[in-house]
Length: 271
Image (cartoon, rainbow, N blue to C red; front, side):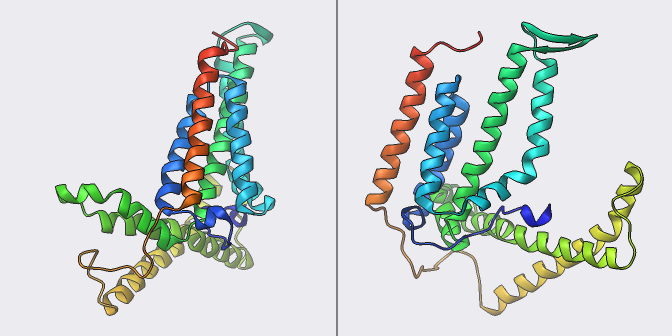
């Protein structure tokens, strides 16, 4: 399961999405999230799915990476779907005592499952096609107006990007620690809930020690390179909006407008 988590990973490439300005990619990702939650009927969600499929096709990210990014959230999707199926009121389909499955519950469960899957896949595409350095520059530029009220924008952007960058590293470290503990005879898959929780202690303690050690080494390396924050710093690569950014912005705007028009002119399935 740990090896299937691809959050924070970057896959180098030369696709149009890789060449886009990171600021535009961040903004369009936020617009896509809004699009998913604005859609109130299957047609609107279908537009979001088609848009996501086109984006992945243009990015040339392997399909197996998409499946890996979705696999860890399957339990959350199932849990959310079950809650909606059993606890949303409406026209009943089947009823066992106080448990009742309704058409509205099934519909809501499907809509929420599709939204969660598209949300994870869409946000994962941002990190798949944007390097950590470009992501830091994009976040810092977008938050630059906050510098006027003395907000440490550069430091905040750096912390967010470092946290995102170290997710794969910590996952790999966790997998190594688990393998080492299993080789020493640790049993992590049997017993009750309390026994499994206690079995995690030999994993969490070395993981925390390793994480703090990596953070200390990173801070020391940055100090040795005379890092003093964002004031007076220059960039080797300057960010520029291009034709690809304009086309992508127009495509996302049209998709969002289509979803809004569908909401207006197409009646909802359940009122």
